[in-house]
Length: 127
Image 1 (cartoon, one colour):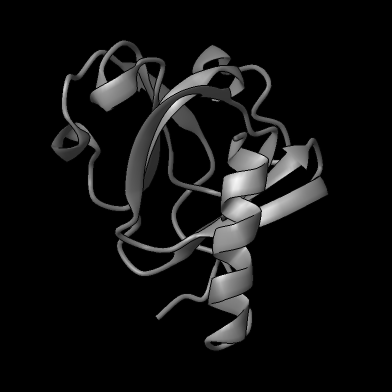
Image 2: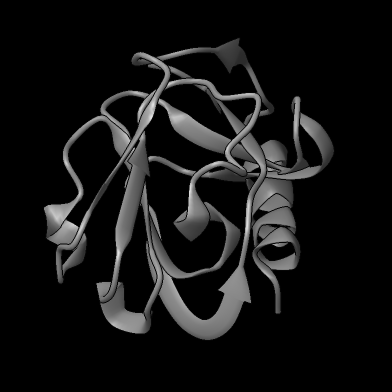
């Protein structure tokens, strides 16, 4: 199941429990490191890992981004964690906030064997 499909189901649940409010957080940008645990994702960031169980290359993003395709791990990852300090992470399947989308609630993390990708993002439901 792709992240698009998994997160679309998750987004439906979030929408049914309170709707969506627009907002932003952090500064735009992304960075790469090589940690080995979900806890290595800094507070305020959305992180993805190339491997299962938060292994392999990690890439992280704290701001709103119209094009994540320049960051390789966002194009093929198996683990993710929204360690956002105050917002939910909204991902898009296309650049410039287009295509299908979904919400990853603040604090949510998961890993699986499928390859996932996202092309752009915003932050929503800020508290």
